[in-house]
Amino acid sequence: MEVLRLHGAKDVRVHQEPDPVPGPGEDLVRVTAVGLCGSDLHWYEDGGIGFDKAVSPLVLGHEMGGVIAAGPREGMRVVIEPANPCGHCAACRAGDANLCPSVKFCGHAPIDGALRTYMAWPQRLLLSIPDSIADDDVPLLEPLGIALHALDLSHVRAGMSAGVFGSGPIGLMIIRALRAAGVGRIVATDALPHRVAAALASGADEAYLTAVDGLPEGIHGWEPVDVAFEAAGEDAAIEASNIAVRLGGRVVVVGIPPTNRHSFTARYARGKGLALIFARRMKFIHMLQAIELVDHGLVSLDGLITSTYPLSEGAAAFDALVARSGLKIIVKPTE
Image 1 (cartoon, one colour):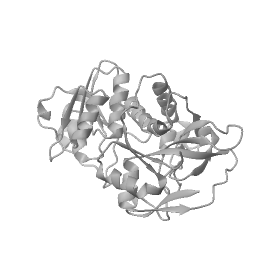
Image 2: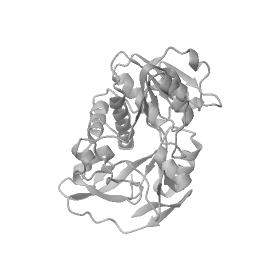
Image 3: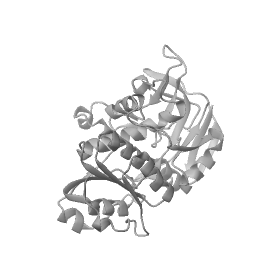
């Protein structure tokens, strides 16, 4: 099979390797589509993310869909839940498996991800996909699940107002999820004009381009929002969230910073008595909810995919990810 491996910063190469052999409780999946995201960008640009480094060539990719290739469920179209938690630690027992310190996560060293023709993965983490969701759209369910987890953390309710600071694919998913939840007023920002336009197309009532300092012009005069979501992985987006949210509001930090550190002005966060909540991936229930919302037409995935690449052109796909010229990039290991 073909495999795309990361050998170091900005160094991905296609290899020919044997097909994986499923272990007990696993199925063999033919991978049809993989989405590239911000964490993949960190791995590609830096050869790691946070304190974690790729000590051996790593297969990236954790937003993924495919078809079961053998066994009783052969031919079933599935979305692949990327997190395989231990199931018995304190976090797992408390219902917070997304915080499991022993989780095996696709595309996060040392666990290989989905940028390959075939992968073996636990059967319980392969979820059937209805015909209403196209193959190329299946990887979008994972970022939608991330958005749904962020909404849960925010305690947002119908009729409230929200700000989304960073309108890349995750931010756009948050906007669409907020609209489905009945949120009244949604304000969004981004540093790129095409993403500001995408925020409006996704359901934002107002969308603004940020300036060099990362803040949109006039933000200090905005009507405060009830909750804010930082979805850019930048300190300026946290600063903007803290400025825009009301007294005693909640800010959910979803983005991953490039330096593994955050910094913001205490005046806004402390002075307003804000609650800053940090989102860690998602829970299994959020993937199930994502499938249901899309299947029932409550959240649309239209307009998010702006380019697709075969696995053989994986290096070009990552170059496009670095350029941020579109929205969601999809790599197709098999048709």
